[in-house]
Length: 134
Length: 134
DNA sequence: GTCTGCTATTAGACTAAGTCTAAACCGGGA
DNA sequence: TCCCGGTTTAGACTTAGTCTAATAGCAGAC
Image (cartoon, rainbow over all chains, first blue to last red):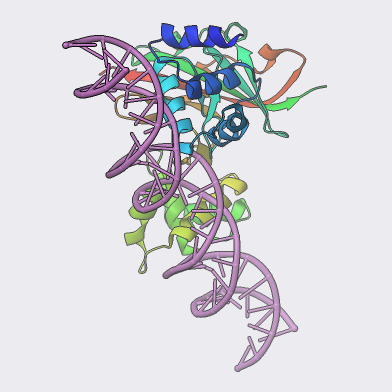
């Protein structure tokens, strides 16, 4: 994904494409991992003439989440993780390595009507815990 | 559930039944909510002649989780929540109030074999987000 | 071009959740 | 009784994340 592509995505979502935002979005869209804010800070700081501030990383991540460019992932305690895969999907956590894998939505049957009348379900997330076989 | 019942449960799980532990387990087993450590601290502090220390609450919760007496719930960022319902079950988060409801396991179809050969699933949790109808 | 005003970025103070440490406190055996 | 292990404790510490107030930078008006 070229740099200008990312600018287009940001603009299309109503977010001004500043260098800091482009660098962070670029990093997230090219990683398979689900990094924390600190990992993002470290990974992106050498991509700009001046290192990003911690506050900017958090500001930017929150802005991108609100704009629907990225998603937050809550699989475990501690740090929030971020995911540029904004299609509706689930997660698999490898309990040995802590690695998180995306699980396509269509592997899991539709669940929202399972709860019955009392609950109006907006969305649901499945988190699998286990081990990868290799 | 009588106080002595809780002592029995703790002992059966190999945990010494100190007053602090009994009070915390007792509170968790009698609440429908999914309290945070701070809420537990506040709710239990008047149940003993001397208020519990924060460290004790965390120590105890971790001990009880390891012993399988209670479960941790990760539905949102911020504080970890605790649940004395240790049967396999899922959660519904009311996005308006933040309240968390238990969803019995049998409302959700079996999912562990859906991922195919590559993944060995130990467990999975479904978190529904939406609104309660009243 | 330059003024103006808004938004973004920044360093660093601050808050909140949780862990760690070292000391004191038990309670059950020898 | 004394000892010894586990438990509790206050408070220091760590870490994730927010807030604040100042600065930087850009886009439009003139």
